Length: 422
Image (tube, rainbow, N blue to C red; front, side):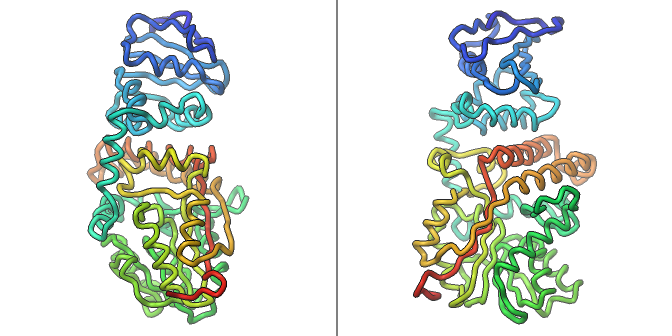
């Protein structure tokens, strides 16, 4: 770093990219914040215009776009080094830093993952404490209900503010159609799942994690009999009312039940973005349930978010923002890990369909609608910390899909050759 500007200066001085050892930081920078600033000197893509608490502005990187970020305290730098994305997110929620467009900041971080890896994952004792906090939120029967209620029982009215009219809280499938409305893209996702099941009218389907009943409604309209499972009382009431109002309650219904307690066999099984909430400790039980409850010759379609195979082991050893603030007890598999778990339960993968960029687009639309409805969110009694948490959550997920750190896959499963329901 060749120097720093004051807030009155028009042009910030620029750190020599890739030459972290040569950076000379202002004397005002505390010792604990210096390692991350030196790390920023290695930015290879884009440019960060960082305004320090004292008003000096430093520029890191030399490319476009230029992303401004203002520190209100030194805490974001030290928190990111100690706790990775958890610390960075928490300081955003606390108002310790400000930016014009949060999505641009997160894009800059992920496109420079190699340079900023230590700040993404964190290190040391604080990170260990975060990991232990995550582990104690495991999804036993009682814990699963508590964890689900923490997220989904915020109130149906809250989710209606920013989800589409189908009340679907999972990735849509746009299929390359630039102008396709979100509700139609959600219906296209359901249609693909139904096509994968390939069931005749009158067949029975178990849905593990029925949400607000969107899939159950479409499947029932196709003539299938659907039993949906949920742990959310808010979703249960909404889904059953929806099915009754559509005149489908004779074909489809949802119950408050843990998936582990299901004993009936079904012609097909569907689980849409519920697997992420199962938790690694219970993955074997989940797949055992699929194998036990899937009739011979039947198919199960599991749509789940996955993390890149190359990132899985490090992700597994830590904890991230989503696990700490949004989905307690959750854990993403990688594609290879998911398939290995399925094989151990006597299941085989018949089809694998990835559409992560469609999820980035889905999240972008959710985020845009959420930000437009902030007055209504506040009107429901949610405070600014809650709003900043959800803004970070939606932008964080969108960025991860766009940069392919995460993906969403529909896995179609069947019994292995010679296998049958257990």
